[in-house]
Length: 258
Image 1 (cartoon, helix red, strand yellow):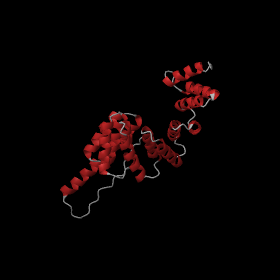
Image 2 (tube, rainbow, N blue to C red):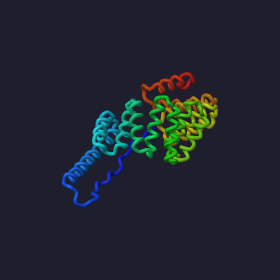
Image 3 (cartoon, rainbow, N blue to C red):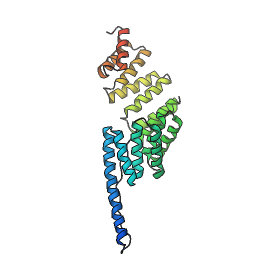
């Protein structure tokens, strides 16, 4: 889970002395024009990101960087675009440049952590998520993401602690319930895992993946009829050509429910 960075307001250039030479005034005005143009590029880039047009966003942020406008945010959001295209190495480079310019951007630490996670560099991801939560102790998404990294390292107790913190901060964070359920499952805690999947479904009742995961836990715990209901929900909410839908249909046949 990553987030885009909004650009801050740019301060107007204010002359500190009277009697400035005309050439200096012209330079100042030119700087303001450049900043104004840069901010327009920021707005365009963010719009492209929101529409999923990541390559166009990169091209626009290249122009903002060339003009030197809100550089930390420009690098951060260009990194987000590279990240979204799966170019994690370039994303890390941009996130790192953004943090060199402004080391207080918790969201950028979170996003760089996500890029490291995607590169299977889980400890580096944990380090970045930890920095994000240090800067912003209320950052639920960063706790959730760090929990996912701990899960990949098989440190499920630490993962559950982080998912629980994320839920404490944001009780509507569906991903945290699903992630905590998987961690409980890995520890053999089926009742707790089923409870978390059930809460996730309560928050997002059309989420086929959650029904799919809970169905197998019901099977594992001997609750056949509930498993059948969940497999039927997978077929109802999943895509027709989705692998989960195919497996759910097959499971219903094996259970004699078709």
